[in-house]
Image (cartoon, rainbow, N blue to C red; front, side):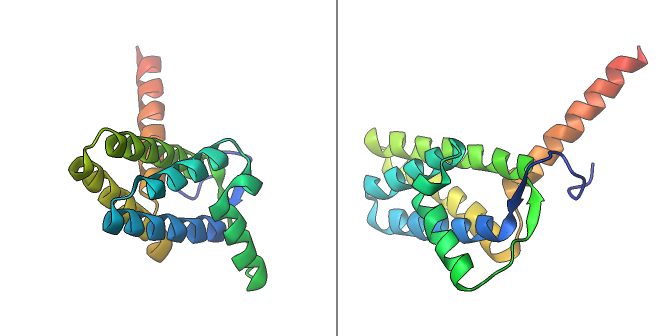
Length: 152
């Protein structure tokens, strides 16, 4: 299955995704330098709002919309499903960060935050989505398993 094949009927603006990823990277850097749980709470809140499809309550989406409209950047549409999967991965990661900081485990939280930072920077700088690649691999495995069952 090629990453360019349509997987869902819904589309998202990959420019918006990249602007939001940049903001996630900025907040993750702030979290790494300050070790303040507040930054992980902001990340969690933003991920929750975007997962709940409430973009007007997502601070990163609101800022991204302001930037893209202000610079008059045309939307670059892509399939929503892989990006949505990556969004859920970000939600889980931000929940884990909040829990680890609340539990007094900043060293483990720092390791998780570094992974989040790497993923956000790959998306921002190179339009390379780790969550999307995992999503495509899962879809490929599902198709393979489905076809294997039909052979017997």
